[in-house]
Image 1 (cartoon, helix red, strand yellow):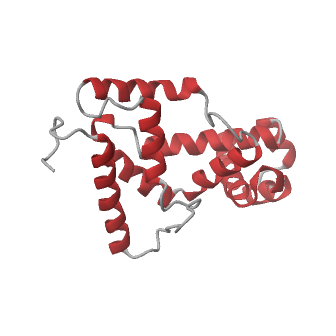
Image 2: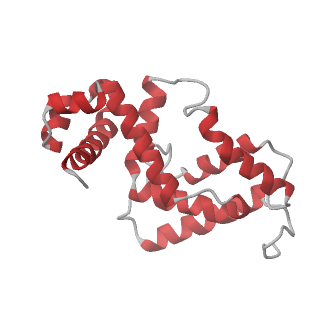
Length: 196
């Protein structure tokens, strides 16, 4: 990694912490610059401004989750559990998405439909193969699985889990989440599933 890439990485990491804690309006570029050990002038040269830096941070965080929890439509319960684990390791993504929803896109798609299209196509193909109940549109399946995985996320209305919670609690949540997703979306007798 060259010096410029290292500076960009430090900026993205520092900005993720700042934006997750304070949102777009409340984030301070002075703190981001100081925490990243990158001058404000250099930060603006890389990203143009605070809004563009937020966009870069959100994209970076989403890509990290996609790497940590790739969509496996033939195994939606496993996908949901991987999302649960990814949110424990990277809670800032959920907070960043929450801020984006509150401060920018209050209705409709948070991410572009073009970004979602490959996932929805994969879910449709899994429906055609009998892995997922075809009664629901792929977009609804995807939205509900993500929401179920976020049940204990940093934006939970009931309980926000942390990596420091007891292992038994995480194991119980993972098992319950996998069972709920399986019962909600996987047809009985689907290929590769055990009988209920």
